[in-house]
Image (cartoon, rainbow, N blue to C red; front, side):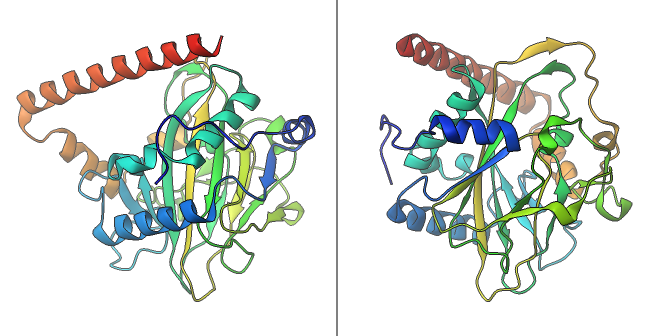
Length: 299
């Protein structure tokens, strides 16, 4: 795995930046090396096989209710928590550099996730806007995601599809697929034209970058091989926004992953919760200090 302190080797041209701002998404043929892609593929195959994060609600079936022994769209939230070596990759360095080109010098890592579409039965990812998942009232920021396929991404195995310029409009209404609040995924039910979608097939190690309001989806995996993707999300500087109250469809969710997460948070009773809160506060303070130091060094 690559080491910390490396410099980004992939940045955007002015033409690519203009294209992203106009269309709300961008495809790159390469954002990291074949060797790193192979390493990442091994890490994620291990994490999914081990059920990493399941007990704390960080691994779940995005398209189901977690009752199926054969999940159709397994996802791991913040996988670097379970494989710290993911924090030291060329992909991460390049993605952060690109995010700062598009969102500003104060852009910071926000969260990350990995998605597996199993061969032959991997489910489609519904049409949605990432901002529709926001559940943090009182603030505002811009967000983008950098999506890395760990094998070739094709229309047959579920490459990304986008609606160009949809990021210029509002967040459209969403709901739980099948109106089932036990399903974690969201599906857009607002007015748009899926027939206008632009597919973005990519080689392994390529990337798509999309704005948080860009409508996107990915088809099912009908191939004989797994389709794996690693996604890093970044956000701009956070500003107060008393008018933002969150989105109602998120409050309607009652998922098995939420229940597992709540049980995990409550383990050890009040003393356990207080200890974890103190550790989390210390980690947050350290991250803010590191971020401030990094911004000073860039000036």
